[in-house]
Image (cartoon, rainbow, N blue to C red):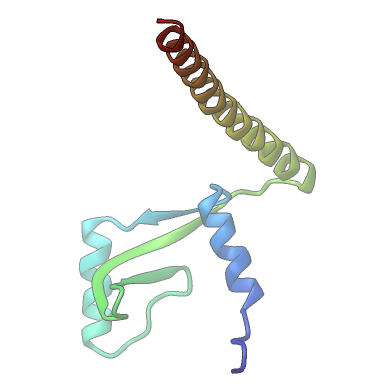
Length: 115
């Protein structure tokens, strides 16, 4: 069975959206009405405007622009490092919860064995 070719640029773009380096900004109602008229008259949307699609790839009459940040490579690295730090703090919190829960369970089992 052949493997599917992964579009790495699309994958990178998705990661940028997931991590907040790119952001979708919804268009206003007035802009949306204008873009619907363009579509219904078989004209193309402006280059910086995109149309939402449903999971079945049906077009939805809602539009967005992509906001990019003009970060340098160092700023992006710093941002991602702080994001990693936040995630590590979250993992530490969950780990402490389960360690404490395990200790309480062990103490309870020890007390039951003694009796």
